[in-house]
Length: 338
Image (cartoon, one colour):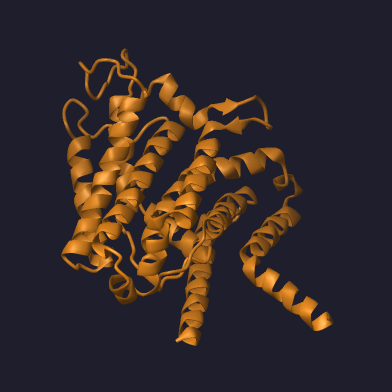
């Protein structure tokens, strides 16, 4: 009886180890500065995690198929610039499009998300139809998207000036909240929670989700079982691109502007959060709750270590060590299964 109970405890700990690590991390920072345990800190961590979570969820679609997506950060930047350029105040002096008429808020947002979706679809076509390895395909797309974004950003009369003067209804998406004070719920957090729920449904309750796991687990077996691998990969990369696009929109709204350098290196944080959250680099394994925990861990590291005054360079070292250890354990589990 005791052995059975011990085994259950061990299994429960192994399945929720990342949440234990998150709690230990929060408690450790709180021991150095007790004010870290506050509603304001919790709220700030959630706000900073929101766009990163949406990007990581997009990356999760690709990683579970045993692929990778290096273009995520640049797609975020492109979508941020596109949405910001279309949603400036009518009386702003340095308007990107001086003669652009007022549009409903949802239209520029949809345009920016569709831009991200199209980039993701291109990635999916290159990977599935031309059999280019995902690393190389998305590396090329990453460079091309940054070039296209820079050309767009440099268009006259903007001429590479930071895009600012955003409309109040757009900025409210990133800074507004339901309620007031520390116990208010920011809109951006609610959007991230809703997106996480939708992704959970796709992962667990749809044919596309089941095919995604099958492709990542064994692509040859997926072919044999009748799954249209190419079509599913195109859908998965397109969805990932749309999520990057949404994240770019929210990032522009949160910060009140955009430049062509927005989203730089975000893909690495997203991939790291996924891997730390249990998404296997070999494909076929990954859960939404793990991705959420991974994003929170890296946000707490970034926010918490800055909060207690530790040199930001140490954050990079700690994050790097966490990534290497997580991948090492993942590879060991894969080797053990083989």
